[in-house]
Image (cartoon, rainbow, N blue to C red; front, side, top):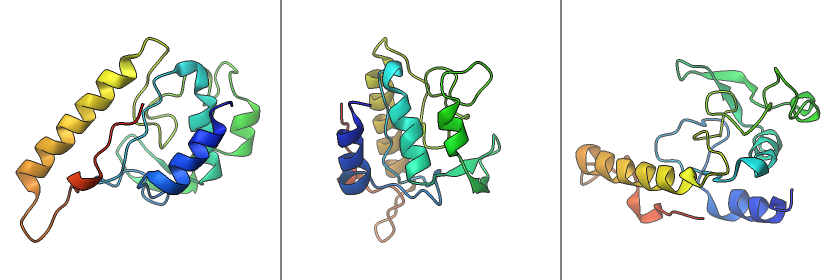
Length: 137
């Protein structure tokens, strides 16, 4: 949790993210390229009351991470059994570990966003706002 102050600053002052709609296409994506610090992503999801999303990409009414989930962190069979997993914790954009693959994944996500913007943005309607595209490490 040494990254908690950084997480606070990111989620409160930098990231464009809507906890009510965690699959909003133009959101900033936070990729934690260090599985050992995955508690940060889980606590952020709980603190900001990120809504749960099912495998069909439907936003559900309940929050993704509850206090009981944090209490059971790193327990086998629980939501946070290891590194934060994509599809198990809403707000976790990709599964990464301590091997540094998060930076490559982040670059791929940025390239995909530029591709989608080029294909779908209209002069008077930008679905993907590239002015806010950032890669933070």
